[in-house]
Image (tube, rainbow, N blue to C red; front, side, top):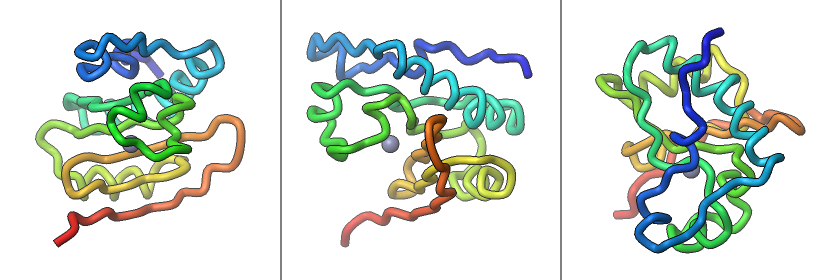
Length: 135
Ligand SMILES: [Zn+2]
């Protein structure tokens, strides 16, 4: 497999920049990000041959609090990313991931983006969730 993901895609955050938060992972968190790329994100990019746009990857404590992430969010460990794939629907991408990849959690978040996580240090539950906007 040829990797064409950059670590910076998973660390960069507009919100962090704007708020002068130094959103830099530790070494173990970098390892987790790399595992997420190898096992999940790169296969998706290769499959759809389309732009995979990462909205949020690694988040340190400060950034996670600011974006109102879950307290025990896998983003904090570098184990999760939120993304969309250009020219492909969320459902289409989720269906393919479900059938073809190992992952911990796969979440359709309000039909706006996909949250996916990979746990290189434990069990991957292959849990699929669907979050809907409150009405
Ligand atoms: Zn997420």
